[in-house]
Length: 300
Image (cartoon, rainbow, N blue to C red; front, side, top):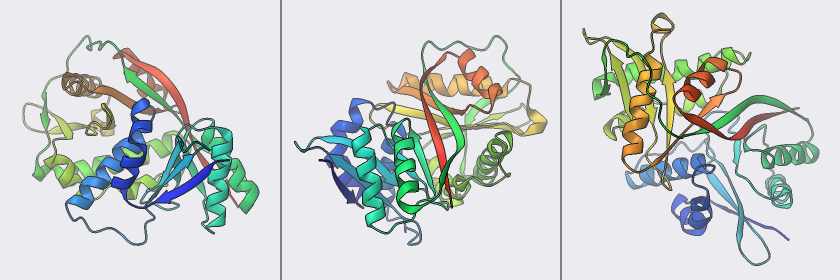
């Protein structure tokens, strides 16, 4: 028998599941970083949007051991679930608990195969069919391989005055990913997860870098998440179309990865498997495949 408990306090979530999340900080990086960001936002008194769901689910077995964790924190509609690896029994119990709450779910993201099990069970309980919206791949930096050539310019930390530009590029990154995957441009619910206030916090926390030319023109942005359970995640990584093909992304990601790794953190990133260009760039830098994940939609 699997017990499902929902919590709304990120501190309580970390207290209950910290050991579980730490066992595989790499695969659990999204839950780890999102929860850490929620703790920091609460501590800073950041006002929450009451229309956005924010809760975490803890699945435990008969002995009370944590066997799975999931969350619903995405600010953009349809507010997809995010599911970590767990036994099929726990995944089905989680889906049943969601249905018992009367909570409609139209999207489920996360680690395979648990994400597929949750989505299939929700479709069975609530009606509808499951379709794949995006297939992603998690990579970890192995031995960094520096690009053969370095483009002109240099990498610098973004400053407060760069916030609007960085925000626009973060949003363009997601819009381009939609287009490359054959989805309507701008359809990603994650676009609304970026705001100017959030960008100011990221910049103040030194999480965003720009590649700039000698005349000061910014031509590329790369970001990284603060380490959670010893793992930092690179992204977004974006170069405007007019500046592509010059090696800015490769050099920026290599330098940011080197700096983050130098702090003692493991370094990872996600790619959209529909974008072979970015997949090739990261593997050439020494990133190695860890696991496949998926974003699923439930059509009704």
